[in-house]
Length: 186
Image (tube, rainbow, N blue to C red):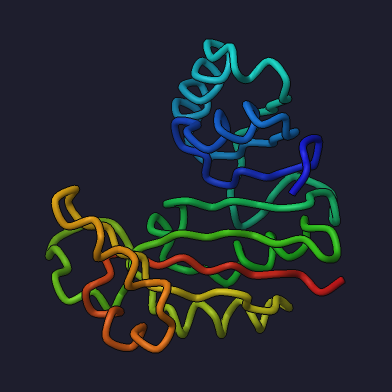
């Protein structure tokens, strides 16, 4: 990934990743369903002097019908967006459509296999295997589908376990969320 590349921050929320990407010199387009979140993201970018080398654009958009032409972005990030969606088919097809051939998207969302789910939560959890199947059906190749372990600082060393692929089957039930990297064929 090189500065100047076009990156989509789909479901940007308050702009945490937009700020990071813009500060690294990327051209970022940030989309969110919530106008108030986009306002917060825009203010965050405008107030951060590190973002002066990058470019950020903001638009209210529905992830199921992205108002951007096909084959526009080199990469996309979706952190926390899918946990607000009951259906992931259309957003994954839209990601595939707006990425250039060879482009990849990094997605982080809540793990349906996590054993300590909170009852009554409005957030959606997703099955990592099903997520991968739907991504593949949309046309992507799956590069990574990994449990994401987040531990308190005192035992953070255990997070290294997620890099040991043969342990994944044991880690899925204790992983609050997961990361999946999908690539559009070149």
